[in-house]
Image (cartoon, rainbow, N blue to C red):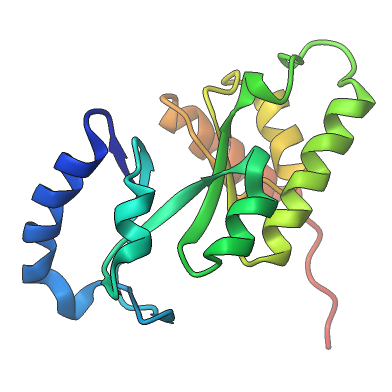
Length: 169
């Protein structure tokens, strides 16, 4: 993911020149046909969506707004590989007490819509604790943002150890 913090059009113009050197390993969208290669770049932040829509050959994809997944996916389904949202824009719960059922249902519905279109889900600026991480995983969130990488690693190790072994086929 490349998080554009400044002028999206100008930043993408500079980035596009650099990407030309790496065409052979980058996933592409050429005339609406997606080809997955070794590295898939996703723009987030100040994404220059209008510029991306106009390109016949594109070496980046975009991060959709999870709250607008229906409208964005309908217009350009090949543009978006992820859909994200700031945690607090969807959920007030911080990991203490019971999660409000309406918030859980809303997040699960958004995740399901995104997954139906082949889009991974990411929530950013979520409370960084195991209770919230467990909730996000249970709702189907694919990507967990954190600054606490070691704690998240231990969470996943512990979580995997508690998973039942797959049934034999």
